[in-house]
Length: 105
Image (cartoon, rainbow, N blue to C red; front, side, top):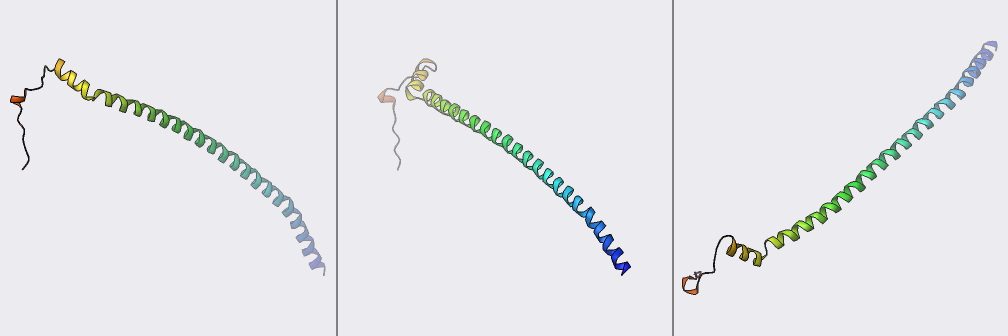
């Protein structure tokens, strides 16, 4: 009986250490989880900021692309090409008697 009482007393002593130890472990787990949430939130904000920056850049590039397309179409306009052919290259429209039509058979 005395042996059983000593064993119960040893069990009580080990239980006294388990409660504070489990409390500290749970507290540490909560602290680590909170730090993880803060870090995850910070990373999310950085990624969102980068995404918005890339969207602004894409919008700017779309505007520039539209401007280049407009400039390209104005440089390739028929009237401009004809004017450049006359002035720079000294080209003239051939007379009708020097024009040869080729028909496909």
